[in-house]
Length: 431
Image 1 (cartoon, rainbow, N blue to C red):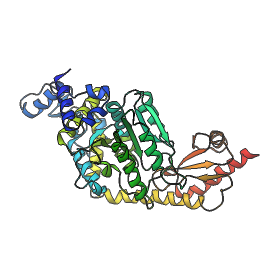
Image 2: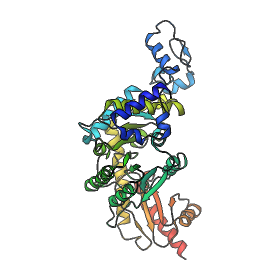
Image 3: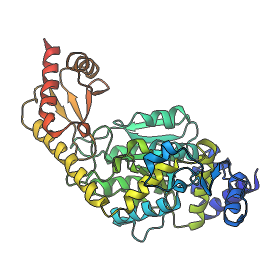
Image 4: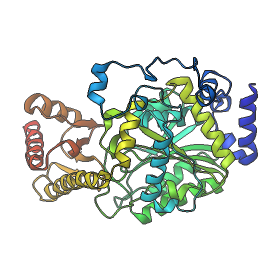
């Protein structure tokens, strides 16, 4: 075994044997090389004042070589912040800025020990890193029955993990914490589980309230106390878009330092939060009371990044950092929040008007980009195709009864026409 791998693994074992046992076979083998091209180039960047002939970029007149036709469109930025490779863990200033943002928006992190966010190629990449580091064939990955379909690809298909679902809602229309607890405790014999919590939820747009959040945390604690090692992942893709009386923070803060058998991992990003989907800037953050453990997990994460994408795109990291540092950032973001909240409230007003109750109900929603109709009389896929072919309206069918609608991309003034047309399409199919 590589000496550096052995050192990282010994550190993790010493600091928390439970976390070492959570690692997949790949997670135990991966490391970030300290004697390769990147480390030698970093040393040269600091010391080679005359000539630096290490890293594979081209220089001209003391700055990264570039095409004027590209730089002309990006003239607000220095070439050094666009064209050079970003570090594997991401632009240091961006990592620090995002950490400060996390603390400001999640007061429950105050006094908790957690690492510096590592930049990922958006959230999918962050979840993929979690899967690579912690999921082996047969390991349970637990999340609700209403979920983002990419979880199946990321954890199930890529890593061979066993997908364990439970109903998202209980009989009262709240988050089914008892179902989560049962799913976790069902893995007592295996002694390991990966739990993925996605709030606001995709596809339903649901975020639990404070009491539901407490019960979720207690369900995870119960699993840990039963001897189950739990990787607790908060997929916070739509964080901040909370429109009603729900949790206003990520559960990452409550899960950090919850129990020695719980490793809290936060996956988030600028993509949805700052409305820069195509920039592909995300983050992965670990919580632990041990700085040595956090450092070892960071090194392994950098190893995964180095072995897959090498490093994230530098320009988009620079753009996001610029936004976070701007005095206009909070004001402009609040303006967009109010637009999104107005759309969500208008949807709920329409659905509660009584106009459509004979053909559908809807799942509780209070946040995010989406909501889901529960069709009473029509197959979801049949309705989706009919809407597309006859009315030029696109929706997402999920299973037999559920139709997901992204109100995020519909102007508030057009929402009534949208739902009226969906209603008419249902009536068409009942003839």
